[in-house]
Amino acid sequence: MKIGFGRSEMVFPRGFFPTEGFVGQVHPLYVRVFFIDEKEPFALVSIEMTSLADEECEKLRKEAAALLGIAESRVWISVTHTFSAPHILPDFALKTEEERERREQLRRVLADAVRGAALQAGKEAAESAVLLHQGESRTFASRDIELPEGWWIGCGGEGPSDPTLTVLEVRRNDEVKGLLLHLNTQSSVLDGTGAAEGKCVSGDYVGVACMELEKRYPGAAAMFLIGAGGDQAPVKRGKGYAPDGRGGYAEIDLHEESLPIAEALGRQLAGETEDALRGGAAELSGEVKTASRTFRAPAKKMNRNLRELKPAHACAWELDGEKEQTIELFALGRLAVLGVKPELTYPTLRQIQAASPYPVTLVCTLINGGAKYMGDQSAYDRCMYEAVNSPFAPGAAELLVREAASLMKE
Image (cartoon, rainbow, N blue to C red; front, side, top):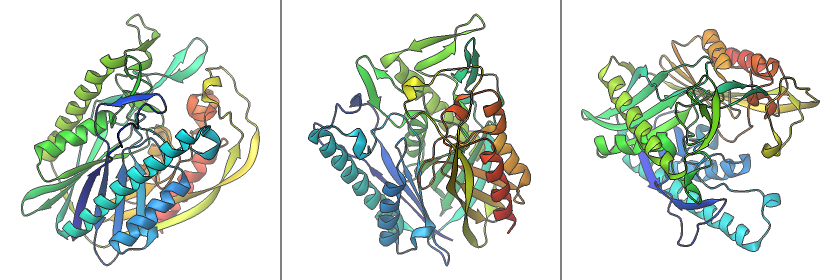
């Protein structure tokens, strides 16, 4: 099987910062591309950003597809969901000409990095073996915590969590050429903080882990895929609610003291990846299969002003028709990877895996765009953040499970 990897740094122009509250950059941001050059080619573009609008993803899919000589439908655009990266903001959020110019600068930076990584991946594609490893990571846990006012976002929550770390290792001539890391968590140690006077740009702890692995395996690229992490977060965060040591939670903001936490968790994840690589492996072979399906999910109205969202014991949902959603499928041997736009939760992950005919089933979120959260029924029952900050009505996640199961079985 011919496989190639590419990596290109997003280089911001002089004077780009400050912007969006980011006062500087502490870690580089990268675009990485994984390319299978076979009869049914496939490309995965991983971008160290928080999110990308559908229209921005479509532009990048066209660009990558043209450079690699494949159909747009066989390109997935994935973001790592680091919260420590500037956004390509919509028109209504831009108030000055300077802000509009910054957006165009960011678009150019991103497009240049995608081109560089895609060209490298295409050029370096060669016969390789793909090995599937699974281990565990203890860098994250449930983020849902119960405050006196109701359920909210924190870290060190008591809800269920899947610590499975899945690693796809690409080997050529007995050397590691690429690593794909999959975890069901957000990468949010530095969300909203990182510097005394504001926020700092970083790939967060999974970005640190990927850079560390690239140092340990010279010439290889390491990329991260975010799974069903809508209700999961790092075990330590620099800002937000954290355990106070007395059985409760307190708000914190560690500013620049957050950076050592992100770097320590990144090194821990890199070590856990190496532990997984030393364990058993299953070689993946056979035909690459891709498919997709659209369906209409029940929708509700939501408050787009995140500053107004607060914990509560009860919520009312105002229905708002339906939203079209797409499920993407990539399969190779015993492995199935489902790609969706919404951020899913642990219960939905477990339901998908239970219904899957594949021995190993991964769920990747924020694929080819974003759609906010799609909480499971328990999130709506308890008025949790994954339900409040969602454009979907109760029942949407359960419908997605049924559609995903049907697609995989077909």
